[in-house]
Amino acid sequence: MRATIPPMDVEAILTLILHANRLKRMPRTGWVIRGLTGAESVADHIFGTAFIALVLAELVAEPVDRGKLLAMILLHDLPESLTTDLPQPVVRFFPPDAKPQAELNALMELLQGVEFGERFRAWWQAAKDEESIEARILRDADRLELLVQAYVYGRMMSGTVLDEFWEGQEERPFKLEVSQRLFAALLERRRQEQRGRRKGRRPTRGGPSSTGR
Image 1 (cartoon, rainbow, N blue to C red):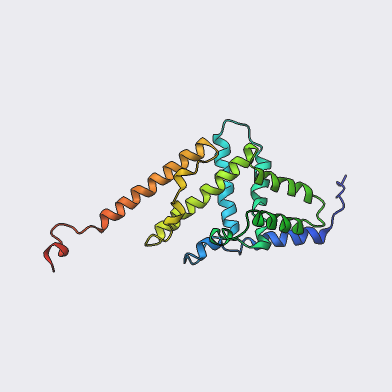
Image 2 (cartoon, helix red, strand yellow; image 1 turned 180 degrees about the vertical axis):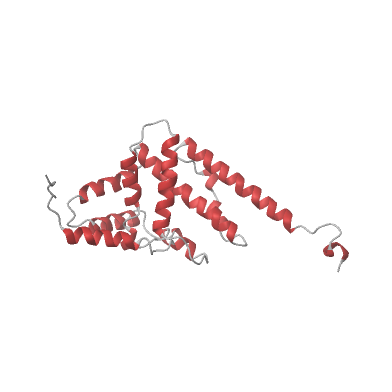
């Protein structure tokens, strides 16, 4: 016997799906304004966050609802399909509640006419509230993904243009101990590579720089 398909506003759901698709073509503007060409998209960032979150879920002692976690990850940046990815150099000029309110307004517009919209909104809000273990994992994974990407891009670029991403990071604790340990390992790897690059730039004894040629 064929299952009964619940009534739905097909046009509203299709519009929602098409808006989510925009995130695949929307660059993360923080990288763009720092001169990176071919920067990752918002959807790329969401994938990276999801993978790190899945790893963290395996490493925490508390039970994790992975279905809820996945839903929260997929939805937490969905409003950017309307607001775009607003970088911190811009957001710092906003009143404190302006960006969160704009994101909520955008989400409500995206979910208009969608039968399950309230469930999506509740998952999105749970991610923002950061009270559940799933929300704490998402928060840490989101930040770790940014730093992993800064590390990867930093290896590709010359100069110190991305150093600002690391400033003050050690003073900001993560929600979870395992996240803190992963961050410490990433930071140490970056420092070791920086030391190696500095040594590689030093003149070699007996080389042209020591003879004046």
